[in-house]
Image (cartoon, rainbow, N blue to C red; front, side, top):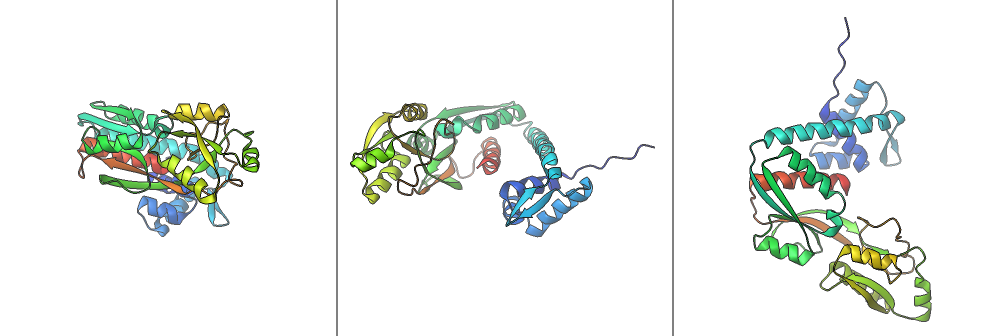
Length: 293
């Protein structure tokens, strides 16, 4: 008689994946809304099922063993199928539409796959995504034109707001940008920026002013693509987070320029208690953003 193959525990797999993504059982527990001991027990149970050590401590952080590395890809695929199945079944009767606002940084990176997953699970829901600047997204959400918007923020707007994370800002340029020449000659450092008002522009100019470094805006763009093109052409330097920075650019100017603050990411929504359709998309976005950021 053929022995029955053990079935991997999905809760244990989730604790395993999130534990590695966070680097510790304690942080994974906070994200999963469980106790640290429960997450630890999950991983030990998974190791018993696999008959192999999957994680080990390296300083204060969790790292994968060779067996853990082999399991990680399977774990993520199993969890993705599980989550998609549940979302599809729970949302089978959902109908309606969602207007979603995005910054270019997110619209060009990890958000499109999320929308594809949502569309596959909720065929009766129409999602329309709009790429726009921060102030436009906030105003459109306040006026009811958009249901959800993913924005950069330093202070929470008046809308129903869900803070996600803070990311460090970076000075970005081409690898051969002659910044030291500008600084030695006392010439204004050329900046490539969006038009005001812009949080990134303000953070850059405030930091330079505080350090007594002269600056000038050498190129103004209406789009993020235009900013990357101008920086690539050597017209100046810019300030962004690490999200979506082209591989041709670098952020190695920190030794020559003043430190920059971090910037927040958050979701704003039109109503404090959104419809079920909007809430489903919001939860999927929150899950993916937690995973990616």
